[in-house]
Amino acid sequence: MSTPKLALTDTKAAKLTADVLVIGTIAGADGPEIAPGGEEVAASFDGDLAKVLATLGASGKAEEVVKLPAGSGLRADVLLAVGLGKVTGDSPTGEQVRRAAGAAARALSGVAHAATTLGALDLGAAVQGTVLGAYSFRKYKSEPGDDPVNQVDLVVPDAKDDAAKHALKGGTAIGESVTIARDLINTPPNDLYPGSFADRASELARSAGLEVEVLDEAALRKGGYGGILGVGAGSSRPPRLVRLRHKGPKAAKKVALVGKGVTFDTGGISLKPAASMDEMTSDMSGAAAVIATMVLVSKLNYPLDVTATVPMVENMPSGTAYRPGDVLSMYGGKTVEVLNTDAEGRLILADAIVRAGEDEPDYLIETSTLTGAQVVALGKRTPAVMGDEDFRDRVAKLSQATGEGAWPMPLPEELRGDLDSKLADLANVAGHRWGGMLTAGLFLKEFVRDGLPWAHIDVAGPAYNTNSPHGYTAKGGTGVPVRTIAAVLADIAENG
Ligand code: BES
Ligand code: MN
Ligand code: ZN
Image (cartoon, rainbow, N blue to C red; front, side, top):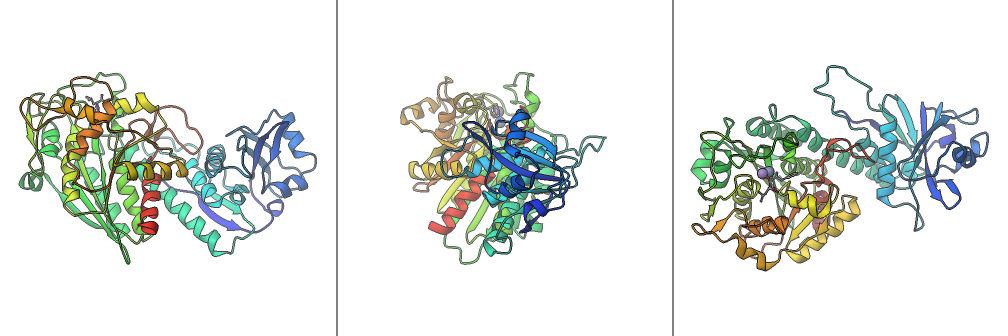
C-alpha cells in the first residue's frame, strides 16, 4: 500500500503550517513532561501545555494519544501529544520513538498534512515509525475508508545535513521494505499461491534490479528437490523455488538468505484443527521478509553478495498429498521419514538450505514461521534465534537494537536423537512435543553445510499480529524480521 510523503524541515515547529502538529510527551514522576524537540511548541502554546495535558488526563505513558486545539500561538490547527513512556537514560530509546511515531501515525489517519517533532529525538526511528504506523491494507475492502496521513514534515534542526538526509532515506527504505513484506503476507491464499507468489517476487525483484531465477515444478523434479515436491504434492497449485541475487559493489562477503514460503498450511493429511486455521495465510512470512529484504539490499546497494533461496508451496490434503509414513529424498540426497505432514516447513527449508550452501556463502540466515512451540516459549512478539552460537548471539543483539527483539535459544544436542528414524536418515518430528522449537532447529541444522555460520529465526508468533494494532505494528502481517536481517547484513558489510 502507499506510504506517506515525508519531508525534512528546519522551520521552527511553532511556525509550521499543518493540520496537525505532533509532539512527544514523557511520563515524568509528577505527570506528563514535554519531550525534547517540543519545547518551542510548548513555549508558543497559550497556556502551560504540560499542565493542560495533565488536566486532560494525560500521563505521557507509551503510545498515549491526546489531541487538543493548537490555539493562537501556533500555526497548526490541532496539537497531538503522543506518549513515549518513562525515560531512564538521557533520552528515549529508538524503539520508544519508533512506537510513539507509529501510534501518532495511526491516530493521523484521514489527516492530509501533519508535522512532527519526534525526529529531533531519533530521526531514523521517527521515519520508520511514521511509515509503518501509517500502514493499512484495504485492497479487499469495497469502501475506501480513511486514507493514511498523506504528508508528514519532520522538524529537525539540521534538515540540510547529509546525516539527516541519510537517516530519512534509510528509514524510508526500511519502512517501504517492511511494507512490501506486510502486503505479501496480507494477500489471501486464494490470490497468493506458489505460482502467483513467485510472479510477484520476480516482479518486485526485477524492478529493484536483482537477478531472478524461478524453478517451476519440472525444474524442481529435475533438480531432485524432494522436500519441496513432497510437501507441494497435495495442492493443485504446484510449488516453486525462487532465487534472487544482489551483487553489490566491492562485495567482500557472501550471505545466503532462506525464507519459508508456505502460502497456506492446512497441515496436510495431518490436518490442523479448524479454529484459527485461517491464520496460516501468514505461513509465508519468512519468504516475504527475505524477498522484501532483498529489495532493500538492492535499493541501498549494500556492498555484499546476497542470494535468497525461497521455496514456495501450498500444504494441502488430497489424493495426491504426501502422507505420514512417506520417505522423501531431499535435495542433496538425505532421506527423511515423514511422521507428521504438518511439520512441512522444515522439509522445504531443508532443500533450500542445502541449495543455498552450494554457493559457499560466509553466512546463512534463515527465517520461518516454523513452530507453534515458538509462540508457547516466547509469546506473540518475541522471535527466537537459534544456530551457531556466536552468530546467533550477534543476530539476537542486532535484532534487539532494531526493536524486533529476537532472543537466543539453544540447540541441545540430546534432543537430536529424538529425530532418529526407523527407516530413513532422519524423521521430520520427534516422538514428543517437549522443546518443539528446538527440535525443529536441530532438524534444519542437519542440512547446513559444515562450518557455515548460520542463524535460524523462528517468527511463528511475531510475523502476524492477530491482536489490536500497537505502536507501529498493524493488524495482520508485521514484516518481522525484515529489520533484523537488514541490520545483520549492514553489520556484516561493515565488520565482516
Ligand atoms: N506453520 C506452522 C507453525 C505455526 C504455528 C506458525 C502457529 C504460526 C502459528 C508449522 O508448519 C507447524 O504446523 N508446526 C507444527 C510442528 C509439529 C507438527 C511438530 C506445530 O508447531 O504444531
Ligand atoms: Mn505445518
Ligand atoms: Zn507451516
